[in-house]
Length: 270
Image 1 (cartoon, rainbow, N blue to C red):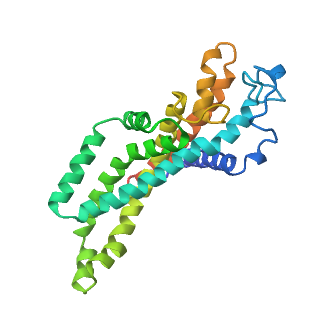
Image 2: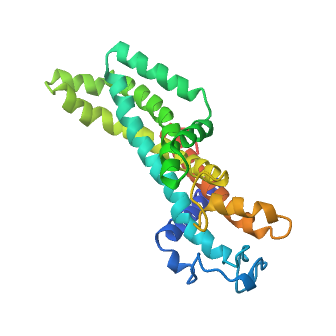
Image 3: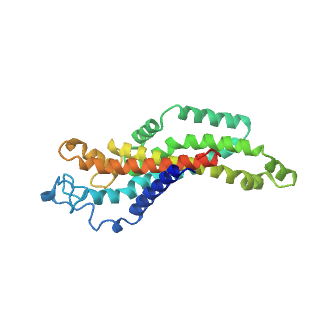
């Protein structure tokens, strides 16, 4: 790995570590309450007392960004975990199923892959209704087809591998051999994809929240905060800028780590 790429990976990991710390222990970063309002301090620009300024209700934007990490990153992580698990099960079963079942599963997957993930998530939320739980479900459903496709491809390749054939010849039953020699490799391939998928899921969840389909005020959530400041962008740019930066940094960091891991897994030069 070159020095530049190593530095880029280090920065990305540090960013993700900070976001994780904010999500798990926000009190380490701020002692203020993200819901406390102070009309007298409304729309104050960044200062020593309020590093990211205050919003229309006088709430500290830095505190809300910190507490918003658990919701924004949490929804993305939950959706990715669910999509990973569902995609692994469906894809692995499809790859080892009879041809007719495999073909039907893949055609359904192809139909979903023909549409952008955000559009699918938007349709699902429109059906289920707004709310953080429904956003997580919507983003999960939108992300599943990618994991299904990769899991199926990996399964079919591994079932024809020499070590799997050797296990069968030695008398290992089909299902134990599948669990021992196929599933771990499929999980490894999907894990690399999931690292990139976390960023995409966070971005999709924030986008839905920005449209008013996620958590409601006064919940500190990055997409909702970004939406709340758009009407006063010329007067108080900091309200939208800092949650927007938090989304951008998190998504870019996750993508950088995921792409470098994928390059390493594929044996390409870093």
